[in-house]
Length: 489
Image (cartoon, rainbow, N blue to C red; front, side, top):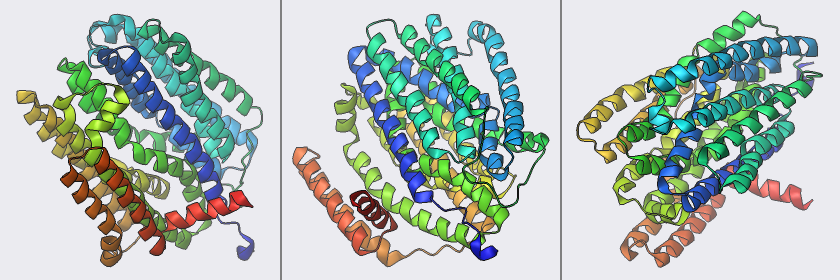
């Protein structure tokens, strides 16, 4: 019977390709929106738009009370559709109460100046901010339910429609009108799409892969799991929105807009790792109750190697060419933020590690180990922020961002290795061989003065790096080649 047991990781590559395609679409649309608004309006409007979008997005784990994550963890363990429906309705009831509390508290928060780091003195943006927060906070629930049901293709369709196509269409229609109208329409459409999706899903919530032995947990267990992760949501909110909110508090709206743009670049690992976490958490949760520990260990080792090989050329490219890329993208240059941006970009390796480790930590234990990692990072960063605030030193905020994410990534890695009982083995020779083309390319680009010719030289170095990855049997290159072979056949 054990020999016939289906692996929890069956179909992972196919589902990952679907998820990463959706994530890539959303990332591209995000880049287009930043460029469109930065060029069509003005840098300050880009600052307000990016602040509302960033803060609303990072508030989602708190607005959903962590229950979106619980759906991804516990629904894969259920086989009975009626029980899945019951648990989903219970989760939605809790989220609805929290959302109603947001609506009731919004005017007092506005009058008390709590919203000022996001909307500044423009009180007309308050309603738009609320709609965007409600839109993202509710839309995550059908998305999480589809993930828990392991209906990844349908989840990708919902993801692309709600997070990419709808905002892009609204921007096309409303770009010439007031900024608050544009943002309101985006949020209202997302709320409508979320409610319609939930109505359809609750009719027949059947899982794509049912467990061999269904494991029903009381809803109180769901609440415990989600509530102990609320600190992680709060800490993530501070980590990703703290820097632009401080700049906005200082009155530096243009710098805040560029900070959110650089944050989007720093989030490039999300393009790869968010889809992986999207398909990974339900599988890791299922693998745990099926006793497939060796498969989990093998996957984590391959994943860590893949992360390193993916993020390294991206990080070096942004470090070398950040300022010209920002000018090409946004349509304006802001030298006062360049050094802070470089510190932010330098955190990509640690951000990548944390994003990969987090689902492995969440699936293995109720204890929110990711919170420990984030707290460690924020403790160090808070001292740097305090020092930066004394003289309103912008570059030190970038340093604080780097310190927070780097320490969080390192601590998460240590905890994950300890929990899964893995031994760290660094293949120094292979790493040095893979890094050599990039190191030589960086030296040549700096010597040429980071001009157009330098960028061409750097692209050649990246191509050589890919060749070396293939020769060193990189799982990333092997996966891409296998995918291309499947497409041909």
